[in-house]
Length: 115
Image (cartoon, rainbow, N blue to C red):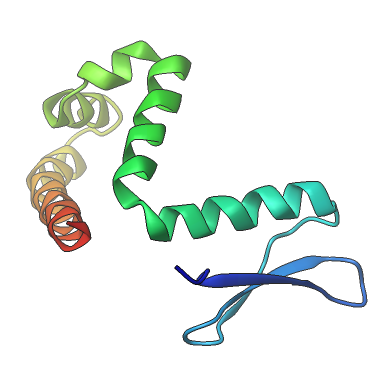
């Protein structure tokens, strides 16, 4: 399979990615060739194997903070509620559930599309 992204270096020494399909260019924000190659490989791998990307993200998160793997949306909303008071707390509680549902729907759609 042909790589979706290619890398190049501008005259100022900064490395950039270019999406071969749509020609969109994006800075890698590094002048290190080794770091730029790692970022390029990660980006191409994410396109080729999205399920592996999700598994790797879970592995990194569990290594950083094991309790994140068992956390639920209720835990997130409870934590958010501690930071707001009065009408803002009511507004945030109602709309946070709506936002969470939209995010979950988007993630589910992405996963279905990936397989």
